[in-house]
Image (cartoon, rainbow, N blue to C red; front, top):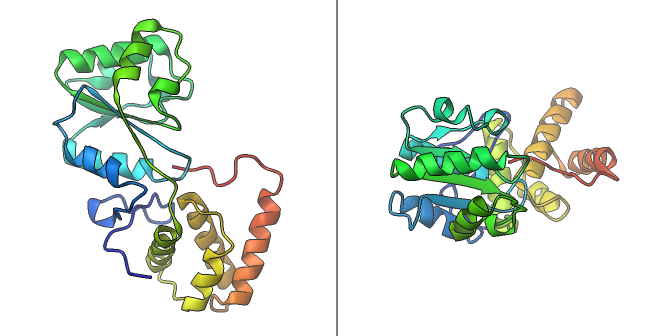
Length: 236
């Protein structure tokens, strides 16, 4: 496997949210290209959509640093709160905009951003055109927004993520361990984060290096813990 130059992660142990930590791969190349084009977007809204754990949060962090955008807390988003949440800014990020957002509040936010000649970056699990929006004016604006998919990571990308996560924790593993893990783990950034944290905990508790036998035990524990759940590896 070729060593990646940059890796996208949303780490719980030590966040790596800078641009230099981001790996451009086929699953996210289009999204990166559009974010790099800012502020030359075709409209006031750009939406990134994809499955849980595909790296949307890391992309928004990188773009927020480059653009100076403010982050809007979706839990606090109401019509009355929009002016205070936005302040003097004309560029903002709203994550998980397809989950329980008040339509009037989102419509008001969109209009304020558009009036200021700014940009709004949205994220969600599906393209905005597929969101169940009852407010016609908002539905039409979201349907017209530029939408870019962020795909699930492939094996090469997950391999790079594992290497970075392990390095962040100053853990060393043999190539055979990585091969073993890649063949059996869930392919998402959240799964990789949970797996490496569990490996670290197990290695410390048992005072032993991370080997294939230890990796087998840890994977088994994770599978038992998540068996029967529909929301495995949920994170962004």
